[in-house]
Length: 468
Image (cartoon, rainbow, N blue to C red; front, side, top):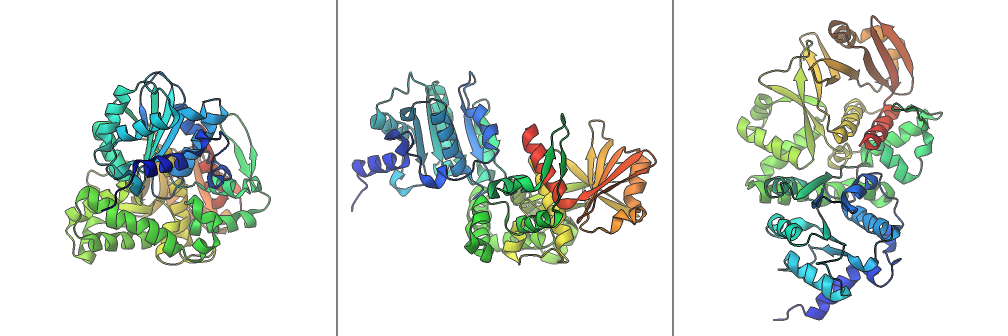
């Protein structure tokens, strides 16, 4: 039986590291792509630091982790780091079967004759989850090679997070790369100038002179955004099911989650996820889901936790009109973490589609999820408010009602639940989104601003990334 030769492995290593021969040898596929703004947040964790920690770059499948690694390598070379002191390995390549992390370092040293015991070097391991017990090996490398900065990445976000937390305390720094925000989506397309940004201290102002064009991009974002690869590929947009469902969702549901949590009934998990995706932004209860599916409530609760850990969904919990949380969370809302998952599973929507209201709400929540700020929704016997943000004293700091309609500019007092909540809790600021119009009302002590949902979504992504 033939075996992979040492020469074949060495050749593969050199192909993955073309900058060893030429500092400008970055493959065109990566060098021609616009870096995501998140790169600026990653750089300080990788550049020289007195803190000895490996960076664990995690995130959902196909959000651009490998591209970001190569942009990080280019940034290091451009800053003056010797191209011979940077190594990249795609751990999932079959050539590296049965390799340990030490084996990779050995090929690095032999290929470029670098002294990693004494010189500052950078080593990137991509798709690390394919290496058994990677977290134990990585922790050992961090201790054994103080001059080497390690970065590992992986698409099985749930698995990486679990193992990083369990084994990497004090040795690993987690960095989550989420799907594209609407701001990043427009930025990568090169059309972000459709929004005018007036910089003011800590509160930039956003406006546009072409709201219809912005809305068209917003609908495209809802249908195909989130994944950088999808926004440039017409074949993916013509058949999102093949790319997003078959290449991303099915791999998470059929491979990542079962292998991590020992799930046996994958069909049961898939059925639940499909139901939740179709009803994104809707309120659900464990009892209702159990009755409709015939699955025990405790099992459904675990499945929801798994899906959330895999960055497919997010749960939002409820408060009442006194901003009090419920001791038993019998009902809650489920949102897709990436709006375009719904169009991949079912069908793309149009601006006038009935589903747009729920998907606009999903898109806005998906921006907020980047901020890692706990949000709630309020519901009581006579009313409901979509977004509630509590301050450190568990009082309502602000709230919002998400609409895809211009109706409320002239019929604002029909928003009785929002007005009632703000009056009752003495909320100073609240927001209502619209389709195209803007305006402002002052009722009691509350200022209510009306702004187009697409513009608000853009501003959220812009502010969240800048403040990070």
